[in-house]
Length: 90
Image 1 (cartoon, rainbow, N blue to C red):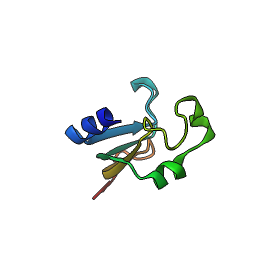
Image 2: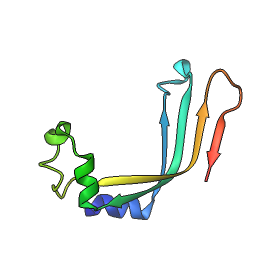
Image 3: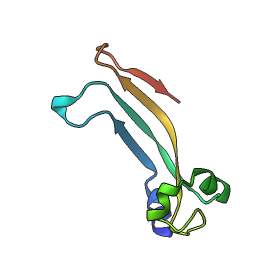
Image 4: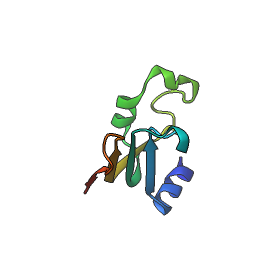
């Protein structure tokens, strides 16, 4: 876990795009820009645990499982119904 935590601390900037699979098929999409941090809170790990994770982790107390919290500062929603995206900034 310390490797992931160190990498996020060194560069916490994240940018996620949803809804784009290629330039030819782009329709509506959502972009989120933010800063990431690693949470070591056992209550958060327990709250987010699902049985589907058993293939990757021993349980919510597995030291290899971490919670990455992304605090967005810019969200952009582009709909093909509009030429201009909707933008929210913190």
